[in-house]
Image 1 (cartoon, rainbow, N blue to C red):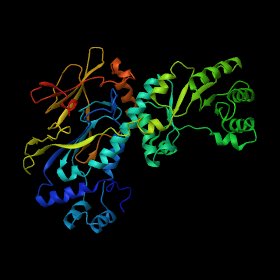
Image 2: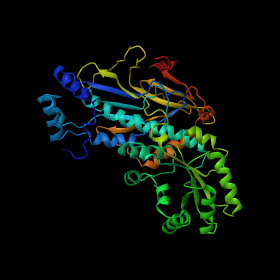
Image 3: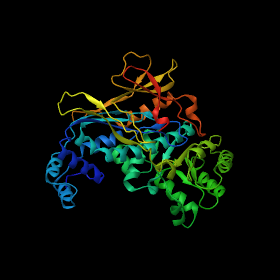
Image 4: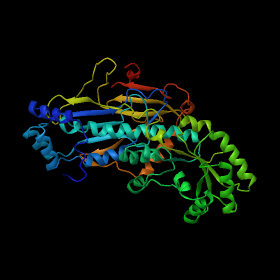
Length: 447
């Protein structure tokens, strides 16, 4: 088996298309594929691009070793000529895409993959699986951090996701502004800050709550966070403050009416002189509950199930479609735009560029998606596509901190409508421009 190969993280039909294209002589035809969304999930005002770094790693590792090739032959997925082609597979084309952490809208060309038909088509499932999940998590996480309004959010959904998806979710949530994660593999692999203290079982292990708290404080210090709702919240808070002489770092509330309880706990802490003790709340939080807690004396949020499942939208419904191909195998043959006409599933042909139009104050006004070359010197329009892979070599890898900073900057460009939690349309419109620069409404608004 090829070490860390991602080659079989794909659908059967990707390889049957390669087999048929090799047979028809079209496999080497220069082609352009595009990854995009026709629409945002219902009620969302914007989406967040995530998974770019993971996708670049996966493309590098897309190799068919002896074991993968033999499996495909044994199960009659490919024939001998296709197996030979796969055994030497290396993506040699170009990939351009939105920067990780940036925002997207209906019709945004998040990723453009250009190469031969065969080498580009086999990446479809791999790219979609990464982008769809990571962007769903990041989009939900971004709404949560907006509602938190500067108060830290901690991702703690590992127990509600597939073990490998949990690592990707922690990474995506961190890009979208979460402060830390409970997942240690995310810390090791991606450098996401990790945090964690104790569960109810630790309290139940001891004969008394005071013994449990004393053991935790002895191990982790007075700045630790005590879980105070195993038995009686008031008594637990009093105990925590007493044994730290008012120096307790934080308490965590994981049940009940969080708004009312947080107010009661804050009043109690202040009355006991523990004015610097923070209050952290958990218990199946989502962006709406975080918004409802905005007026409560809460210092931070722990979010689990909702963030790792995209808060009701576990996929972005991204698609990967052929939008252009060469008219012949001649290396210099011009590209021909191609598009689906299917009802409700139509596409817009042509290799695209993308710009974020901003007003004089720097706020986003529109997403401009054009065919051909992008105009130069067009006011404050921000180019969105960047080089990710050139000639098969990854050139767009960057530290996770860059994606996090990009997301923060993109959110600061958002118009006021983006901050509404009520259902509504995307906060800015998407316009398509033809080769002559003529603007038209987004066709995906109707498809």
